[in-house]
Image (cartoon, rainbow, N blue to C red; front, side, top):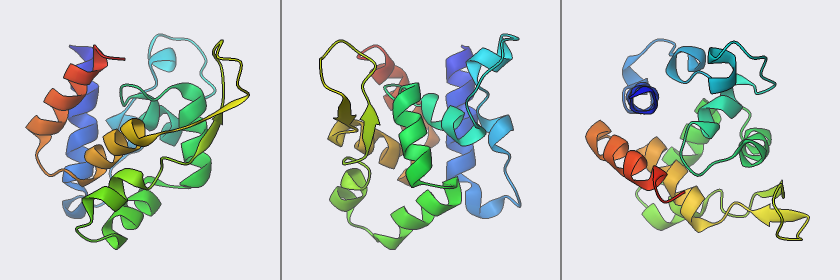
Length: 140
């Protein structure tokens, strides 16, 4: 239920952005570590990306370095017009440190994660976003 609430707030913020004066990223997506009373080193924009299923902390930090703000990323997607494939590929080459046991020092974000982020930023149907992200969480 908490994950659905976070995704619902996040989706509404993205879908309704043109109508809001100043949506607060902190209100949209709270870092689960700080919500539990623990200290978190994630910035609000990093916490926003971590809330998207499949995006880990290290990937979120790298994305946040590429995108200084959510408005910047939204403008990047808008600049691509109606080209869905270009939007899905926008972030796929971002490199982040490996935290796993794969033996590689770094990984690419990849098409699936890039497409998931693009879907969050470009869809205008909150029900689609929530159902897609909640369903994909079981795949991660």
